[in-house]
Image 1 (cartoon, helix red, strand yellow):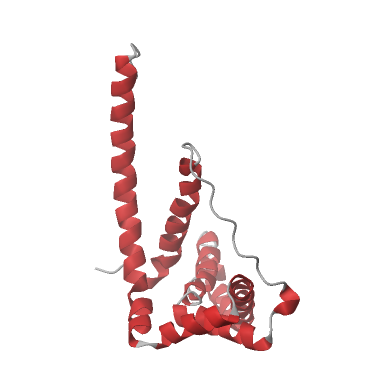
Image 2 (cartoon, one colour; image 1 turned 90 degrees about the horizontal axis):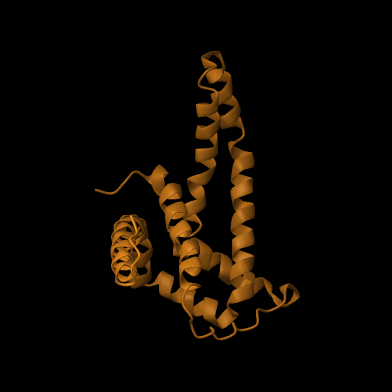
Length: 184
């Protein structure tokens, strides 16, 4: 069963948190240095075509869809904060509804920012190839499957994290026991 759409910010936040936590764990063991990233084009080098392709990739990839649930979540948080003042409910709902066009502009601003980030990290040719992929049946299917894939990945990561945590503790206790230390 696929969780309802409003949960996606939590799913994405969980996935992001897990991905952000990974470097901290990775820093505990020596790793070969990563190759230097390709230099990003300077902002002044981004042509309108380059930016248009970046925006197309943003929209076609489904990443922009993740912003769709964030704005309504803000409204819901405000409603929850006002739950102790039920007399405000009608006016609060009216105000939140009235602000929707402004909130849409805020979402578009984030899409523009994200598009510029893509344009600075990927060449026009790369973006053209990526956009072509997302227009293909496989690309469309990829985007369509992402919400379910992300939900399942978050669930799998939660299970995996718990299992690895327990496994690591058992192994550390065993190894410390061999050295005469009893960890609880």
